[in-house]
Amino acid sequence: MGFENVYNHKAAVKESANARVNLIGEHTDYTGGYVMPTLLGFKNTIELSRNKESKFEVFSEHFNEKKIFNDFIKSQSNDWSDYIKGCLFVYFDEYKKIKLEHLNVYISSSIPLERGISSSSALCVSTLKALNSYFNTQIDEKHIAILAKKVEHDYIGVSGGIMDQMVSSIGIHGKAFFLDCLNLKYELVNFPSNWKFCLIDSEVQRNLRSSSYNDRFNELKIAEKELDVEYLGGVELNKFDSDKISSPTVIKRARHVVTENNRVLKAKECLLQDDIKQFGKLMIESHNSYSKDFEASTNDVDEIVERSIQCGALGARLTGGGFGGFTVSLIEKDKFSNWYKKINQYYPAEKIFEV
Image (cartoon, rainbow, N blue to C red):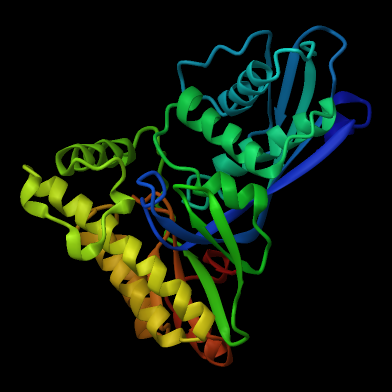
């Protein structure tokens, strides 16, 4: 379709943000722990121009639909345009000195939706980057991420951390993004030459606003309260006292986070030491914990993980917020073609994506 075909003039600015895959570290971000995602080639692009008719017009290429509005009031139907409204609301609330200007917005994206690879965060980051460029507010990348999190948490209503927004705003494609979610310090770590990651789409769609994601968030907050800690991410594995937690379910949720946090630290060392086999084992441990203790996997996803390992992957796990979406597998690059040939017998090529 294109911006010019919809609005009959050229866009003033154009900005993009990429999706991500989390290699290890699920639900450790909002508990003040560590995560290690990396960017994917999929991206969301936002184009903007001035609207001369005193209204906001937003066109989505994916939905082939235009929304027109004059205020930033959230819809009652979880509409896709809420993310744009949220970005506008947060941006103009942050920069009150900027004169409100109505805009034309065009959204194009190659990111599969509701698959756990951060399509919503990429949309928020790219929109805020476009507003930043259009109004020349010179916001740095870290603050873009902070504002994007505010959109999703405060406006949309999805509880969560800042991993997705940080890597989408700051990350570099082809490097691991190791992040301390408590102080927002990060490191970009190179992948060893023989490491290969690959995604498999379970085609199980998930919507974080309607899934059990917020329930898990609340369960972990109960654990923090009963353990009398501000963040679970600060609890060392050998100091985790499950006897202080009253609910068996909450014990399982907290145990996943504490052990997962430890796995992320070990995984970073594996990257630095080129220990691909141990990294793979950590991925398998991570998935088992995510499936059994956190109960955020599905039978279909578990089957994909098992098959990937049977076909020769050194590690595999569900990635993202849980309850469906993509799995990520780790394969030795010189054995990738053999793994692909075997896994392709179960899943078609259009469901398999190289990272």
